[in-house]
Image 1 (cartoon, helix red, strand yellow):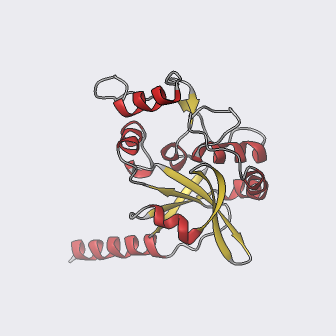
Image 2 (cartoon, rainbow, N blue to C red):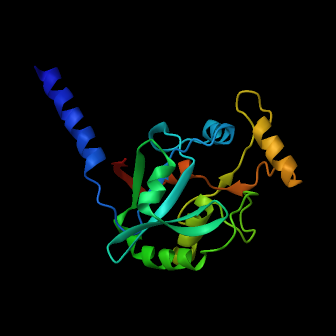
Image 3 (cartoon, one colour):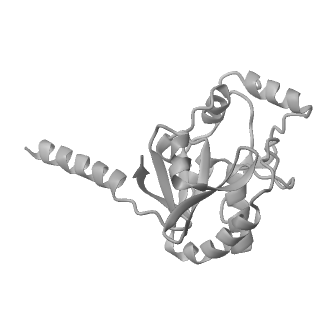
Length: 206
């Protein structure tokens, strides 16, 4: 009987965890997208909240009761309707919310992000090169508002941990860009931000 009660409690907790999220401006949405070998390579070398694989993120922006997501995706930084953003994945999205003492920095981070709309997407994945990839935008937005790093940068790797050789997809990718693979250079990724001690994962939405 005790085991059944514990199981029921666990199931109710899981249901509550995934159903009772009301989005707020400044929430960060983490997605697992299916973009083929590139996403698979990213997932193999990064780890997100509870071991989840995240390949994209965006920041919630609510205006006049309409929900948008500020993101760096496609060709540039843009403001995307939430209903469009959630179609990027068929899996549940995880919602990160800054801990209370950091929430006062959200308005300035939103303002900074909106000012970046139209800035080209950083397909080179190089930090501080005048372009933005998804997690880099969020990193810089809070760097600007907090006046020091809120999230962390880590040395990037494009090598398979199984072979210590560059993933073929990354080797081909940078060959087409006619540039060296930026192995070891500092960067960030959705998985790393999802595990930050500056925020809590408060639930999931589908």
